[in-house]
Length: 195
Image (cartoon, rainbow, N blue to C red; front, side, top):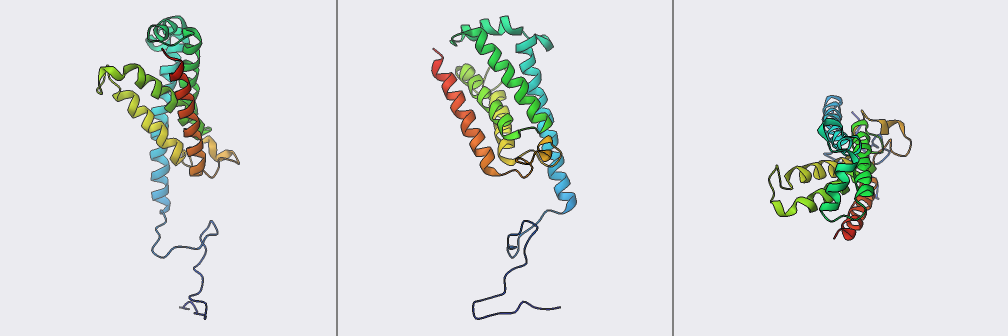
């Protein structure tokens, strides 16, 4: 077995990894089965969180699953201090529906996660005075926001539509961070117009 040769400049360079970067001594690389487990776990999280959000949004938009539809949701938004209740209901319903579907499919995952995070921040603001625990408190919205934010940061895994998109094929933390900053800014802007 050959050994690395030393030069006056120090030890020989480490063998490159598949990304082209030198391998760090002692670094762990997931085994194929470990990578499949990671990707499968992300898929399960995306499907459950995404489809729950999409169903929640369709309650607002279409009145499906026992929801109030746009008119009933608009009345609710007006009653809790949002101006232009009908517009806010449409925005919230569309954001939840399409953000949820984006998470479930793993399509534009950083933006989908940011969209869900932003709407859940507003949902938390509405129920903040009711304590932490469900059914009236912020517990459910906080869990959904954390899951969506986590998915924006980690990426969707390999079993996702993003793996077919050149820009998002290799998820980068900066994509998630920038998307979350956008989601936080949008949530803050909406909260500022609430009376």
